[in-house]
Every structure is written in C-alpha cells, then in structure tokens.
Image (cartoon, rainbow, N blue to C red; front, side, top):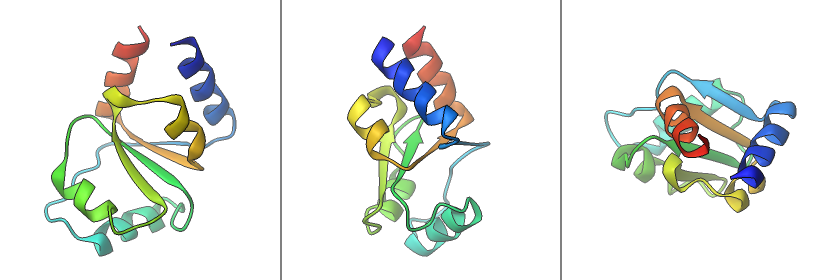
Length: 102
C-alpha cells in the first residue's frame, strides 16, 4: 500500500492525474472515447482509465486504442500506474482507491 501511495504521489506531483465527474458511455464507440480523450488533452499518450466497476462500453471502446488501458480501481497496481503518462480517475473510482489505501 505504501508503494501505491508513493506512486500516486509521484503522478500527482507530475500533474498526471486527471479527475472527472464520471466516465460513462451509452454505446461502445471508439470515436466517442477519442473525443473524450481529446477534450482532456491526453489523446495519443499512454492513458490509464480507472473504472469504479466493470463498464463494458468503456472497455470495448478503449480496446481499439493501443495507448489506452482500462482497469478497475480495485485492481490498481504499481506497474500500470507508472506505465501510464496520464491517469483518468472518475470520482467514483477515487472513492474505491481511498477505501483500498485506508
């Protein structure tokens, strides 16, 4: 847990954490997800999308993008965290991370 806290701190200092209200998609369209990433100014970079729970539409939209990875917040690990240039964290996922870290 301490290593995870430390890695999150490093990403926060580098301004690599991007907090969003929610990350929901009505349909699994890669084009829609690309639009969201462009608005966040992270398109084309290594992005980790943390999800509070399994979200089939977001996961299916992201799987066609080679630089985007989705991960449930409860499975957050050092390797995925440090391997991403930016981490997009919906507020619901932040609550899951806070529960894990105590």
